[in-house]
Image 1: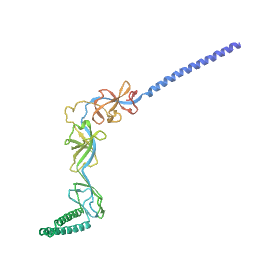
Image 2: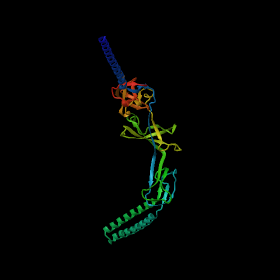
Image 3: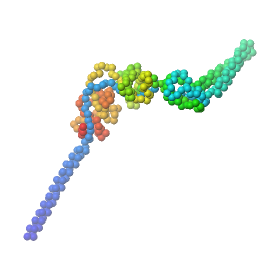
Image 4: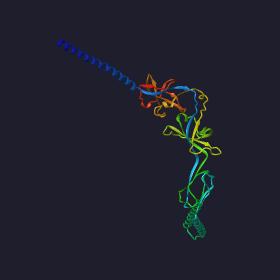
Length: 358
């Protein structure tokens, strides 16, 4: 009996060991399968996508910029002295030659009087030497010296007159007084700022145009211009300058002259938009192959997008054309119907598995 009992206990123990081993093996297989599934999920990158397609869109090219005054100038003082009168206020419209302020010029007047006396004396001396030369009373060298003294006296007189004239400050451009830096009683020295005058009867809109568009336009072309604060109004602009060299962004700076309204509704510093319309009737109305602007990795300058093929991301070089805001024309590298990644590119590399979530 004792032997049978021990045998049964041994069989039970062996059974428990076998059961525990099988359980561990099954749990390991299940864990490995779950780990593999998690690894597969983590191996893919979630992305949003869109399709490359032909669309009928407005082919006008637009570029934003800032309005600047056609002319602007800060008037400095040319002389030292006390400001006696200020003839204009901020907001005043002034014309070329109009008096803006008067500076006390006692020392300049004294210098002018002395220069006039010296000049008259030099004229008289020269005349005496010229007459004496005819009778042999003086040498040619003495006459030449008197002529030089007369010339110097005349130059000093002219300079004194200029300094006296500088005590009356006059506008050299027409426009509106944007800032006034002086008051009656102020003391100014040469170089001190007195007025800032801006001419906004005509403005300049500075913007940039990419190389694919710049070849379509030339200096003198008339284009439409809009201001962000007046969305329902349209202004006329004329291209006055196209830079011969591209900027760091690989775009070409363009300057557009814009005529303001009678009430000068446009102000310097406002945001404006230049609308470069296509004159090619064959281009207008035709479907254009476009891709979302968001598809470009690192911006338009890199000209690269990720295309989704068979669940994987493929980095493709794209030849971009016209800029239509949220859409970019495709000239090469992509075909109609292809799927491109529009978000999630930051985690992507070429050949990476992706999971489309939109």
